[in-house]
Structures are given as C-alpha cells and as structure tokens.
Image 1 (cartoon, rainbow, N blue to C red):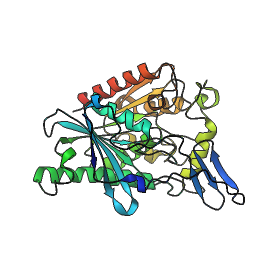
Image 2: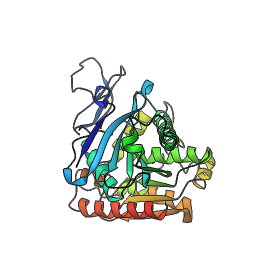
Image 3: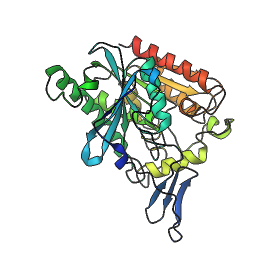
Length: 345
C-alpha cells in the first residue's frame, strides 16, 4: 500500500517558470525545452517534466512517501521513501541528489519519483531525495551547501530517533532507519553534488558508508574523445552544447570549466580528496558524452572504486527510458546498487 505523509508541501516553492514572452528581455542562455535565462536576470523553466505528489505511486510497491522540510530559510526540503514490512531500525539510508545540470530538476519530478520509489523497494532502503537550490539564481556552491546541510540534518535525526526526542512528526521514517549505514548517491549533476558532499564529509569526520555516482557530471576545457565523437542515441539527455550551457550557468561567474567543482582531476588538492572518499561505485553509460571523464575519474581513484559500464545506453537512461535497452539496463543498475549497499553494510 502507498501511504502519503504530508509534513511539508513543496509545490508552493517550486520555481517552474511560465512560458511567457518577454520581447525586450534578450536571451542570455537557453537549453531548449528546459530553461531560458534572460539578460535582465529573469529565469524561465518549462514544465516539460511533470511534478507529482508524494502519493502518486503504484500500490504494489508498498512505499510510504512524504515531503519534509529540512531548512526553511532556503526552502530546502526532501522527499522520503520508506519500504513497508521491515522492522524498526533495520534499513540503510540513501541520501539522493537528482540531476539536471544544477539548473533544472526537482525531487518532485515524475521520472525521479518513480525511479527512487522502485530503488527504495529493490535495495531495500529509506531514500531521502534532496530538493536543493538551482542555478543560475543560486550558483555553486549553493547546491553543495544544501547537500552538506541535508546530510547533517539526516544525521541529527539519528540522535532524535535513538533518544526518543522530537519523534512525532518524522518517526514514520526515522524509526525505520539504521543511521549507522548512510550512503550518498546521485545522477549527473546530482552525482557531482554527492561527490563534493562526500569530500566534505571525509574532511569533516566522515560517517558515510558508501558513495554511488551515476553518470557523474564533470567537465573541463579540453575535450575528451567521447565529448567530441560519442555516437548519441535518439533523444539524448545531454549534448555537449547543453553541458557547456549548464556549466556556464552553474559555476561562479568568471570561472572556467577547469574549476575543481567541474573538473575534479584538474587540481592536486582535489586529487587528494579522492583518497579520502568512502567506498565508491561509479555507473557509466557507454553512449554518454561523459563516458571518458567518468572512466578517467575511476582511473584516478584506482582500486578504491567499483566501476560499472552499461552497454548501448546514454545519459540518464534510467530515468528517461529513452531506449529499448533502458529497462533491462535499469534493472541491472538497481541490482548493482543493491549489491553495493549490502556489501558495504
């Protein structure tokens, strides 16, 4: 049975722009069908991907789902998924960051809602899907700051759950959690956030059991072979032009794509962070323009990383289902994620 828990309503705070015409604005950047940024600073986001309520899940999954506030001044919230039928305190916690080039996306997007509900059921785990601030209104490091704050908030719930203090509004999910097993995960820009948050956690005492990076969104000024020559599947989720546009909107103004937030292999200090990361799995798509960067990242990590390449699919196949191979490859991915979490319990 699907149960919706309404402790917070994010729909009042979703910044999805209307497709209105501004004849005098002048367009600074545009990623067709998703976001338009005008010279006067106005931002419009389309509703091409629908937002859905926490309750809109198939009954057979047996998921309790609700939206919870994390930090009100920045409107930071999360959507939490809890599989039913498990004893209290037994499920690992997966803190997840959605993709979207740092500029679009939401924890309420239908594609993420369905993917994470299924993932929570398959692992099984309690998933906390973080709705972080978006660029260009909030350029990096805003998303990283939100990620660090969200992970700290999750850890705070552990002390409340174990002590019995302040349990009333959140006990529907905190009571199910084994807070000694917290994993970070994300796809595309969300994987970049998970990596940077994990790096911060490593430098600040850790407490994260594992890190899952799905098609992590990295970049650089010099082009890789896959960026220049990768054969893109129909309806590709990420082109090189879109990648460049996202980075131009997300990085601090004046920064190049060799900034360490974009290119983690460009600076020695960031390279050192790789050695501090928890056990890590990187999921790579064979037809993704990011393939070579993802493989290079794994090579820099050496034996500390588990690498999986999914054949015949492109960027974000697991949420867009834009290929005949998407469903079997998504099933493979969920199986790999389950094994990773179980192995690193």
